[in-house]
Length: 285
Picture 1: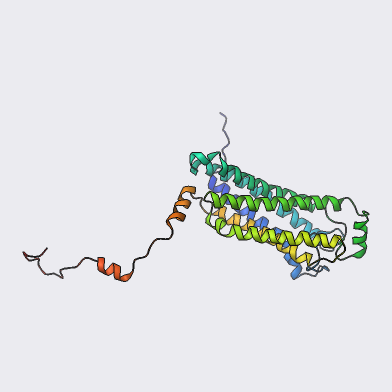
Picture 2: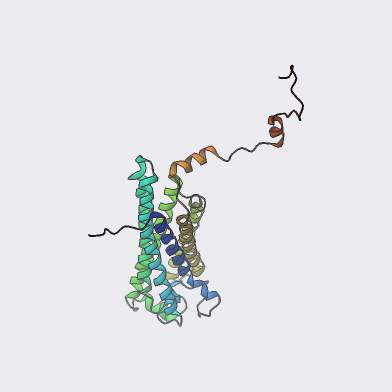
């Protein structure tokens, strides 16, 4: 007699995805160790990726944390897709089961999976040196005399940030439009706006550095960029750890607003009078 394997319950999958994403967010912020460990790089000017460069003393550590972070987020995103899709198929109204809500949410989780995969690949394609700290390295990079991993690293980093931005926007829009988790509807928009601002800052600083006009605090902008991504991933973990709600229930609560509170005077006026033990008379009503 053959036994058909069964998938874990939706609640278990949601909890597993939440744990994976939370651990991935923590691993993705391993660069904060530079606040207590001497790395030899200026956090105001240096790329975050330079911490993992092949010639850096702690490069192996930061490459390992990037790999772990990417794999954890990738696994968590894939687990979340199956869990959220199962919830949508049961709790969403018929018009939304295979419609815009599920498509937008699935696309958002797929973009987050791309971010995780690209981050893991990024850790296997380290820079050979730190261009913002070493003028010789910067000159060799400008002349095209560095290993091909520099170009590959730029591609994988760009894919990772594109996936992260797409995930932030798609998941936030889906939550706002279709009654997603309250924390995501509340904190998602400001995180998306802050991430867009940090990304523009980073791109402008990279362009200035490539043109020889200084770094424009490149390190601060990029560290803010990756920190906001980690915060958003942690927010997603919190939302998955909570029981799902029906989309129509969330929209009804938003339309009704908070319940009205009665004033003490109103409660006193509506309270029925007691007879205090007196027998009712014939003329009482």
